[in-house]
Amino acid sequence: MKRFMLLTVLFVFGFFLIACESENNATNGENDTPETLIYLTLEQLSEFDGLEGRDAYIAIDGKIYDVTNSSRWVNGAHNGYQAGQDLTAAINDISPHGTGVLSRMDLIGEIVEE
Ligand code: HEM
Image (cartoon, rainbow, N blue to C red; front, side):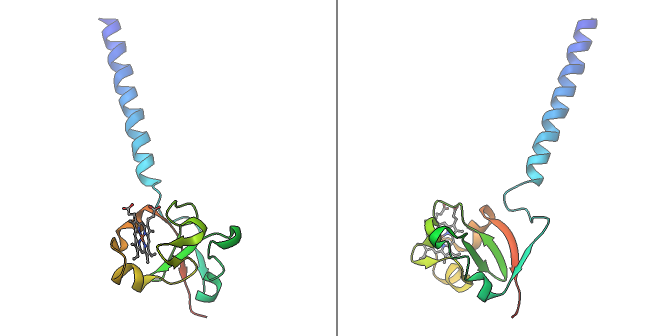
């Protein structure tokens, strides 16, 4: 009987640990807003074009996403588009996927006026 109770306690404790771990993952997803956002003008954004080893950032609806590590944005290029720009119109009106894909990218900042 004692052994049974010990096993039950261990089982419940193990379950509790797993539950905590998955909750942690849920709150640390890829698209979580980082603690410190960066603020760039469109002119500053143009420096993050992904070329020559530079990071690749894109702006959509005033938000800046980091696509540097995306296999679909090698050297900042994606289906005829280059990073470092506001691509709101292109992703909404021309891309086949729309803005849904952005949830997989890191939201890192916002565009500010000059
Ligand atoms: C005609 C132009 C475009 C075509 C044909 C195209 C096509 C694609 C395809 C097939 C994917 C993969 C879809 C998936 O994994 O579910 C993708 C991913 C993506 N596209 Fe586009 N796209 C176009 C334009 C754009 C534009 C203008 C943006 C603007 C920012 C954009 C942003 C993205 C992003 C962020 C991803 C996700 C990349 C990843 O998961 O690593 N695309 N695109």
